[in-house]
Amino acid sequence: MFRGKKYTDSAKQIDKSMLYDTADAMALVVKTAPAKFDETVELHVKLGVDSRHADQQVRGAIVLPHGTGKTQRVLVFAKGDKAEAAKAAGADFVGEMDMVQKIQSENWFDYDVVVATPDMMGVVGRLGKLLGPKGLMPSPKAGTVTPDVAKAVTEIKAGKVEYRLDKTNIIHCPIGKVSFGPEKLAENFNALMGAIIKAKPAAAKGQYIKSCVVASTMGPGVKVNGAKLV
Image (tube, rainbow, N blue to C red; front, side, top):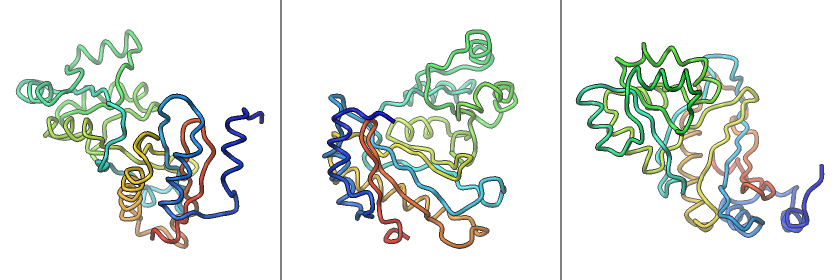
């Protein structure tokens, strides 16, 4: 795979065989981010679970201490007072069937998170095939199906992130921007890893955190010592 000169220069500063402490890893990620724009820093954690089994799912949400550096656009399915409360909390789009029709007819996806009140899930359920593959389907576990939509919107705007396993038992989640600097990134990293460790399923056997890598959008991955986190 061809890599640009900037990436190659960055990669030379990282010891591939080394498991770095959190603080050192964050400093390296910031130092080796090669792009001119403010890159997003992502955490990739491989877990020793089998996501095919319902009792080994790892999923949840947490408000990062310093947010993600990205303003999330929120679509809320609610009616009456709940809809008004969602608007007041800063939701970008609020509606009912009108939003369902817009998504179905226009293939409209100009939002990052979808929140719904429980009574609207019958309506939102019709969008399962469209929202599901994009990871946008609201769920009680992620706190996006809730009677208190205003609180959900406030938390999302404050930097709430959802973490969930993919088919290869890896969690991919943003922990901020390069411009945050190593200290804020480390605090966000520790908060997210703490939540993932707490979410360990009872059915999980053996080593829980198999590997833990942080990387900026265009930069090389830095391995973090997962054994020190558990």
